[in-house]
Amino acid sequence: MENLKKRILVPIVGQGSITHIIRTGMLDSMSEFCKPVVALIWKEEDLINELKRKGYEVTFFPPYKVSPEYASLRYKINLWYLQHKLKTPSVNIQRNYLAQFGKNRKSIKLRKKLSETYYKLRFKLQGGYIRELLQQEEILMQKEQVLLEYKSWLKLLNIYGLFTVTPFLHEVDLIARLLKQQKIPVIASIHSFDNVTKRGWQSVVFDRYIVWNKYNKAELQRIYKPLQQDGLITIAGAPQFDFHYNEAFSWSRQEWLERKGLPSDKKIILFSGGPVALLPDEPQYLKALKEAFENGEISKDYVILFRCHPLDKVERWKQYVGESPFIFYDSAPNGAKKLDHANVLKDDIMNLMSTLKHTEIHINTISTMCVDGSAFKKPQIGPYYDEVNPSKEDLFRRMYYQEHYVPIMKSDVLNLAYTKAEFIDLVNRLIQNPSAYTANCARCVEEIITYSDGQSTSRAVSAIRNFFVA
Figure (cartoon, rainbow, N blue to C red):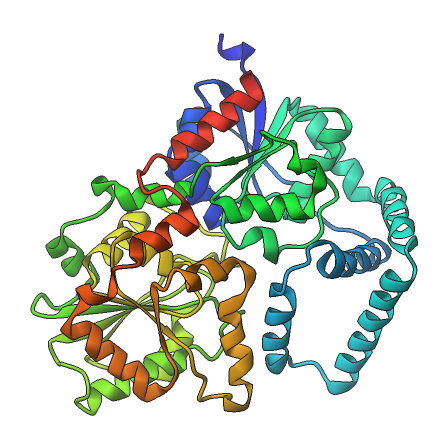
């Protein structure tokens, strides 16, 4: 019977896909009705050995490299996709905000801007231009060496189908493209609620999608008209949030305090950092808290636990903020060559869940962690000012109104600090009466992850099973 199971390729390309597919138990559940073939994009010996011990077949992505000619062509197509197909304010909101941190010379920036303007005008004024580019892309890709290598690799694997949580990755897009040409079924579960409106052009539309919420479904249907047909998109919730509703994935407060080296006679404020690529000046808010503690503006009954984002290094925070008896730093697992290329162990998940559970107040900047904290009914604070770049403060504030984040803002779960003084005042107000600021937590959870029953993995697996077995 084992030999009769269909061979389904399951890419693992970073920490998110490890958590989503492996740590939730999704992969083990899939093995009941298919034979997952795990494709790793980097070599992680502990993970490889773990998968092989459990009987999983492991393969590795061939290197992905395209010609400069193809990269230039895809760049143009992506400009069209972001401007005319995706149709989300998020693109310009993020681009305008990040432009202030660009290190390119002004002449290079100007040439790039002129180039983009030229192609955008052509897309607007010349209706058939994008059709020409798409035809050229199809022809050119057939000549790319990477396509031949991926084609040979897939042929050797004898794959029946593809399940992925990263359909937007170029490597996975190429796999889906080749499989769809052979009429082999492909299904994607969107890993994070911001992915649909924050990723670039794909060459194919997957046969089925699994998403977190009604907003993701509407976004996909807006972008890809074929998905407006009933039954092609399943709202399953967020599988990686199942841990939040499972007591087995958190330590007792005492064990957590001992593991983190935190004082047992203090209450803990959690500050969750964002990725350095998006929020390079975010350490200013942690420094403001440090100064407030040192000036006696915040009760000494509290300390701060800083959680570093997996796509960041804790050293930059320490360098900017400095050491303090009121701040405890916690770093996330990082890959040696690429930050995201690191294993995620059960202890890593238990560390996060325990941190969410046993802290009193949560501070985060334009982050999914607002939803994580809401799942644990914690009051949330969002810095809404920028003293490092005051002239660009409006650009920073607009980041809170990217399309994926608007439902969080409308849920009124986030308490915004418009100035440094208001930031410290909010911390003190939440310390004095935290329960007065948690009324909208359930609304935020419902808006973003839809379900709070801890069964999203089961719903996603059922959708995958029905797709491949029915």
